[in-house]
Length: 67
Image (cartoon, rainbow, N blue to C red; front, top):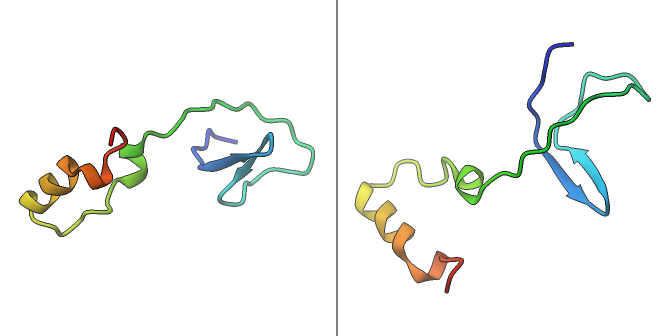
């Protein structure tokens, strides 16, 4: 099988894929865990908005993790 990139949720000590995997039951696989940044998670959410609106949202305290 070629390498796959999938998204998963880590909860209660287990990784749960968000899409089905083409694996057999009890098949061993090698995992590389990469934490997804907030920028990557929100990519595409502001499509179609003008640059000024995107800038306002980016600089707003309402959406800041520092506020």
